[in-house]
Length: 200
Length: 159
Image 1 (cartoon, chains in turn blue, red):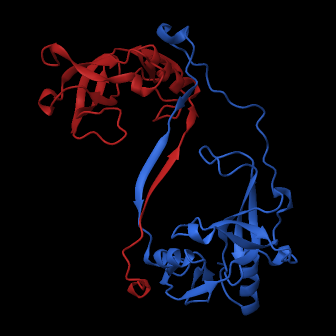
Image 2 (cartoon, one colour):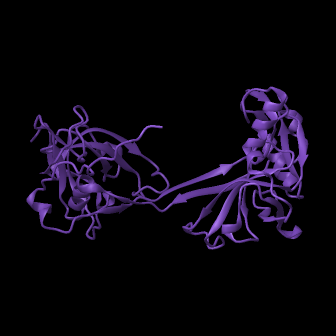
Image 3 (cartoon, chains in turn cyan, purple):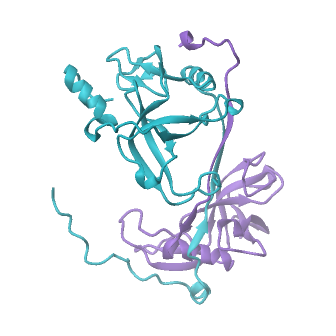
């Protein structure tokens, strides 16, 4: 590791010379530049199948035909090997926190998401990559890598073919997965044990 | 992947919106251009060779030197290239068909892209002399400039 020297001072560039017409007025310092994109989303065939199953509290993944890695949500391909991954597998709604982020700044327009909130890669049992979700049901400060969690689903009447069926993931109280075996490390360990190649 | 099309149901679809309410700090050079717009004045920036770029940029595009001399240019100029927009795009500053032109302002060496406020493409031409049309209430934004309108009986050939 090398030390990167800090600059002695922040460069400010040359002083800006203004014409008389704007030199004695209050300068504009900021500008509003909102952006907005409206689009029709049509999920891929694999995602359609996934969303319909998700509406009945089933979580589907894809198994790679190359090395058996299980991806969730399924995309219909193994992107590492550039091959179709048609095999669907059912996953359980339990797993562990592979990595997480505690956010203290609110998102404008998301009054349903009070801060601090915890977003996490949930590594479902049987899956080899993380599944993005919120962790709740405990203090943000108590969330940790390896913590076992289970899905808290919306009431059945509110389920639909959307990504919003799991409200959040809550601690199960089971013993943690050791950090050295949690998250993407699990796949690396599995590959090392079988003499395999690159990680998922 | 027809083997995954197992439902026989019509495809799912959703109308989605992504929206970010950005507020951007301008720095002194872009800030000077926006300050000018609020004051109904157009400004550019002078390069080492004396040419003037409008809108002003912070660094010389050829030499990469920082630029610092903001200069006022005319609110009148000449159309050097244009197209016709009909209908206006959703979210456009204009709600009627309009021209979109590169306008070389007098005193500038690079053209500014903005709207041309005429009723039909017959009224736009390369070489047409135009002048800035300002909003009455200005806040320091490019939309303070409503667009450019033809200068009466004043073409490049005739001026």
